[in-house]
Length: 279
Image 1 (tube, rainbow, N blue to C red):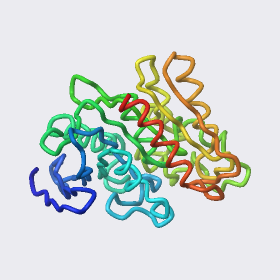
Image 2 (image 1 turned 90 degrees about the vertical axis):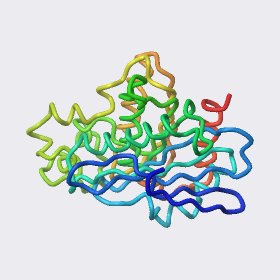
Image 3 (image 1 turned 180 degrees about the horizontal axis):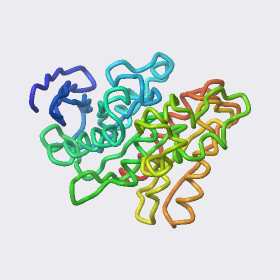
Image 4 (image 1 turned 135 degrees about the vertical axis):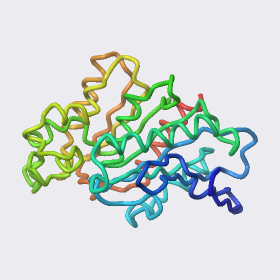
């Protein structure tokens, strides 16, 4: 574990700053990994991917609203390891850099997981908002041949089709998703409205096949940032392809599940991962 630092706590072992990708001219990209102490054998691992419109956020500083429910401790108690993946933000590099970076984290776990008591064959990805988009992209484009394949994905209120974001926007939404300075345009490095082919390439729905791993999509029906239609559209495409997908629409919930209790959604997410990764 190049440059990694490890620390033991009563319930977990933390491995910090594991270098997973070194891009010329850029800082080394890392992941932080937490493994349950009491695990009798290698455990399945959940790769957490943070949100922030591909513009903000850090795996090292989860937002306060998320930590009120502390999904990471809940995952540890459920018997999972948790890996927090770092990726380049859109101001640092355009897509597909973000996907490349998350796949690099998956590859490290697939190739070296046994050194840290992680089951290399039982990897799930879990993200919120922009992180949910990347989780879906990894799930749908991961390749067993290059060790980037995963077994399951949970996507919280994630963009799935950049080309339909604006047409599905909530009436109270204030984001022009097709604008040159929208998060989606900044992600692809060009105005989305003028570059539909690039937007299509950056959309999870483009890669739906019957080979998709099991996916759980969770979305608030009052989301004014990422329309609920995004998860509905992806769920419909996966169902039509014959893939396994569950869609949970949270009544009254805005983006980040504002207006709804978070703890039950964490429990449902972990129940899904338990079913598909530990059965």
